[in-house]
Amino acid sequence: MQVKCGIDIIEISRIKKSIEDLGNKFINKIFTQDEIAYCESKKIQKYQHYAARFAAKEAIFKAISESVEDKYSIDWKNLEVICDENGKPHINTIGINTEKIESMDISLSHCKEYAIANVVILYK
Image (cartoon, rainbow, N blue to C red; front, side, top):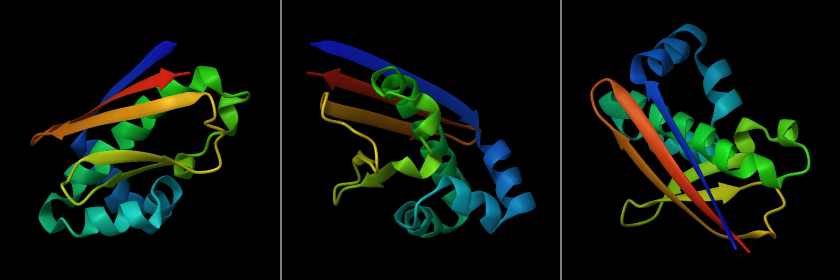
């Protein structure tokens, strides 16, 4: 059994600027439709939620990249962060072989200036 971690932090202002400058081109390259719907539902705080998911994808990549054959084949949309009915975020992997993974856990947080994500993956 092996444990891998990934962590990432990002300035919310960087994500806000990318969205304001590039609009849907940026959003649709990085986020799935479910992630977009969730973030947009947060209205004025949407940039915090986009930034948290961006950090999550970076953190997941750090924790998972050693276990995939070609880490450069992972696309932004192969990793999705969706919250359950209680608001707890969960990771969906799309098109990535996860048979070696026993479980994944993620924690997200954000404040006025930063968003952070921490991922722990337990391998079989």
